[in-house]
Image (cartoon, rainbow, N blue to C red; front, top):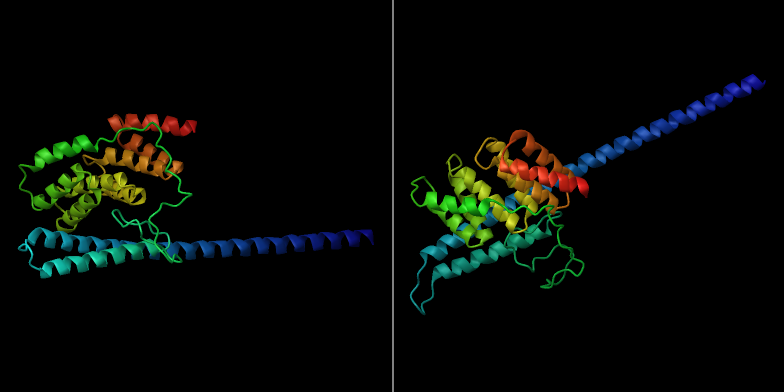
Length: 285
């Protein structure tokens, strides 16, 4: 009798463990489904944001062209001025829509009173609980200012297609007008994607985004540049700045991975030496 009771106990325990295993497996499957759904929602949001950004860039281009080409007589109304005002209103509306998109980051140059869902009145005051981004370990000075001066000198004698737009981007970058610089460089890339100016245009556009605090967008630009020109003139500098952008976002893991890629692919460069310094500082945190 005792043997039968023992066997029954073992059978009950085995059944309970089996049910628990099924429950765990079912829970894992549900988690995987939820993760898949969430990733799909994020991808959809990113597509909407990218489309809005492209539309904002096009509208800004139209505004700049109208402002450049319009010279109305003093005191006389101009239809172009009305068109400019209309386009500026559309841009502000688009930027507000981007700020209201879940997970969206306001584009460079977006008005400070852009509001998201659930906010009734726009506020000009910064959030009370706003926290400054963490400092980059071993604040390594960027190399793009010196590279910019060299590009400006080279562009003065260049006859490449799109050089006028490129020079405008360089001048805006030099003047610290980063949103305008991004708009000009982006216009060049769209119009002349195979131009030799496309590589430096993307590099300086990414740096403009970085300097404007748009670290997420800068990371995407730097990463795209390295993928398109893995052995290009700016590949090692782009990887270093990408790692610094990750640190600004307090993403130390991706910063280390990017620095490791820099060290592996561009050993012996000044940027690889800077990567060694950053890696040591990240390891000591």
